[in-house]
Image 1: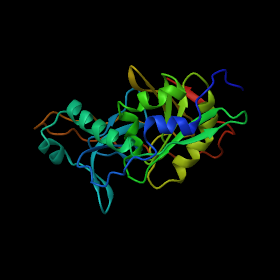
Image 2: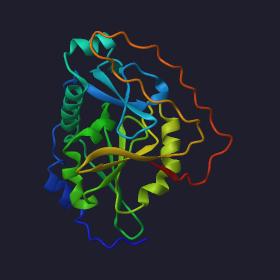
Image 3: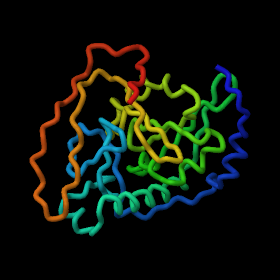
Image 4: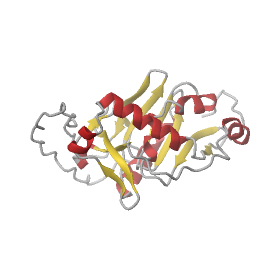
Length: 245
């Protein structure tokens, strides 16, 4: 399919964004959002907006382990409520975002098919929470983006105005299954209204329960329900389609 828009060249675009020469940030972040599958059953997990299988967990960057999830006591000790935590996590995501160099992939006609962001830091997928992400990329992808995050270090960005991300289903499922640190097989729209899940690719696993919310300060956490462990399907469809929400 040929797109009707004329995009600026990748070189000029990167120059305009000022990302090509960005200096890497080396200080460890004390408070970040870890994005991961609900099946990991991590304490303090809350679902991303509209998501059924992807949660956000308070964490800190760790020089040895990469990321360490905060315990309930550690989260309470921050003195932050959930909204304040998310604001801090978004700021950390922005500091990381501006150090990443986008990789532009083109289709057979030479038009931009998608943009890949990959970082070595273990919370790289959380750049989807940064308020700067949409302004940085809307000049080439439009004002509605689709983000796919198969592992916690990789983000694929597509234009929501086209259906190219639909063909990525099997790739996302495979990368999610093969990585040591999986993130999501759901698709997220990023627009001026914020981040929301628009569906998930079907990997054959059984539906999972909702994530456990953060209890009020001082409250005893309710017992966590056991979530079923997904079983690999006998066979996968050749081209998984997005299950819309």
